[in-house]
Image (tube, one colour):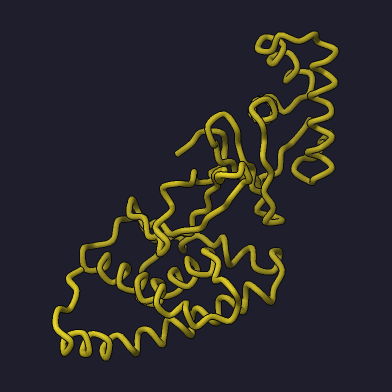
Length: 86
Length: 153
């Protein structure tokens, strides 16, 4: 299970978003696609479930979508914005 | 707030404001030094502190609102005697929050973001007490507040 850090706050600016990590005081900009992936991950807490939801929203093949979601999750993990829970 | 009209009233106004201005300047100095001297992780709890349990989130009364606005104006005046090139909005908001707390008023710090003209992300800090917004720099309406979850407030 993917757990987004509870220190995160979000500010929505038009279609984009800015995520503030209260643990580090750093903030990150999310483009519209990243913002949507972030929102879906917040709800589903699972990479596979997120891909299922997003597949119905984006006109891209599933393989590409899976790669993009995985890359986004890797970024969240690398920045300490999320962690995996068994 | 009504401004003093004549030079004598202006002098009286300045005279009576001086102790409060000095108090605010010292508070601003203390807050700014803390922001400069400590890391985010050391300051996090203090910066993001919520009002103590049992404190009801309410709008300030007309009298309290006047006091808050007066401190805000004075803070803009005293920030001229600063220790660094620019006093960040966070220092102003935290100073105002500390000052308000000393009078038993609990305003909450709000952080917001926007994209500036060049497309960069810009952040801002201001205070909120109930539905009353207190922002010495008066730019809060240009920013969208950060909040937990995905819905905007």
